[in-house]
Image (tube, rainbow, N blue to C red; front, side, top):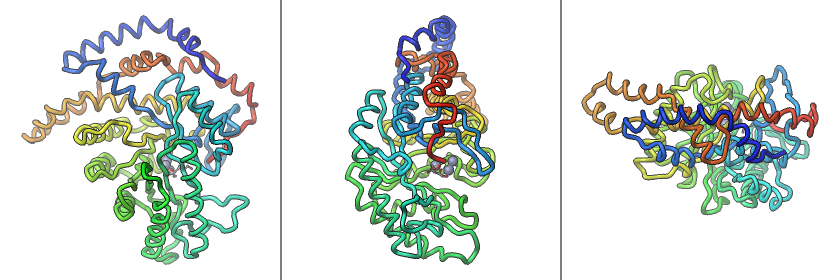
Length: 427
Ligand code: AOS
Ligand code: ZN
Ligand code: ZN
Ligand code: ZN
């Protein structure tokens, strides 16, 4: 199914007057603060967030799964779902695929389907954390780090195959997340596991086209609970430095031990030009993969503050990073969840754009602690929702994506077309 701009405009109609009033009030405030609303909108419209193909179905835990119905049954339907999101928010103009869950058998067809919906292909993900039915060797004891060179070879070849699929789709980026690690002390040599991983990654890196990036994702634990080979940003940074300029670090917000200062990691990676992109999500305990901004919105804002600062100081545009969501939802409609996540990212970005950086720099220089805090929280506490809504409206999207999604009965129609029992592939 597709949403036409007429349908979206019709839903906007009754909301328009109130929106215009709210936007006018906010514009007046922003102008008084020295910001041009139209310039902010232009920046907000540049930010496109890639939707993970694996988050379009209801996620489960090992205790259970409660499918919502009407989930995409194949790659075409996943692209169709992202097209629905993008039609509503005009900010989800990309999809990130996971191989072999999403093999594009007919790449030309998949490419034109996506292009017709205004979608690009962001990072392609390899999968060496599961065994596939037809796979000769097992990843039970690791993949790129494995003690057996034959298993490493299989995992390297898989990654190269993923690059080839990505090339066929016009992607420019490979994401590597490894579950490799150990469950018990003494099980593996840390040094050997690292060195095997590095040499495997070097072989994959050698196959990257010139205009490609390799994203190295880190995670402290799970599915291994004693050690993980790429456990933290330092390890991912070290690997990317050893690999070369096309290797970068991928920061998944859920992949940190409690209370880690993620914004400081982001600042350091940007300073060294090794930040490649994000997997946005939120969490209270671990890799909870909850809706972005649902638990710690201030942290999200602080991360964006560093991002905006890092991009501006390097004179780089937002599209030089891979902005992706990595989420999984058990109790909400995944499409509603993703609409909320994209909006949370846009809000944090916009809030970061209205930090008075000049005043902040001066206050920092004077060690005026209270004023520094005042400036940061002043930006964070400004309600910029009308600005985001206006950006969507100008791009042909919905003033209220979630409300429009419900009003147009999207889920009900998907269930009618695909069935109550249609379950998506993925985690
Ligand atoms: C796993 O925890 C990582 O976040 C991965 O990026 C991602 O969730 C996975 O590749 C999708 O299954
Ligand atoms: Zn991730
Ligand atoms: Zn994760
Ligand atoms: Zn996660």
